[in-house]
Amino acid sequence: MLKIALALAFALIGAALLLTGWRLLYGPTLADRVVALDTLYVNTVAVLVATGIYFDSILYFEIALLIAVLGFISTVALCRFIANGRLFESGSASNAD
Image (tube, rainbow, N blue to C red; front, side, top):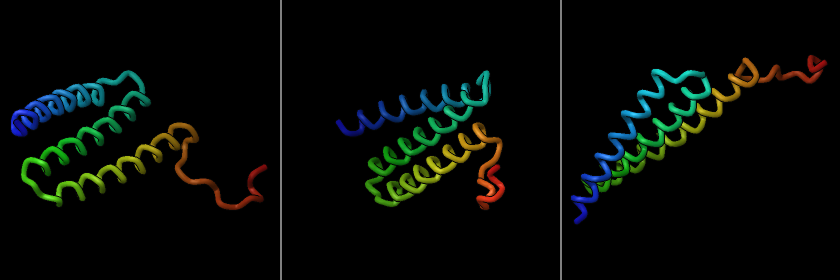
């Protein structure tokens, strides 16, 4: 029963990866591409978790956690870049006029 569920999960995640790749390549706006990239991270985490269940290995879960954290940080950085045009603030309060 678990093998059937995992096969179905891999098929659905594969379809989600294909649709996400299409949106990433042909998204009409930059915001669509950023959301597609974030969805790609989530789909990658799902693949790693399903692979970890299939092989009964905790290593895949640790890698999935690392990719999830890096995906979150990169999404926040890309959104800041889209909103402000730069990633970091200037640092000194005297230049804020």
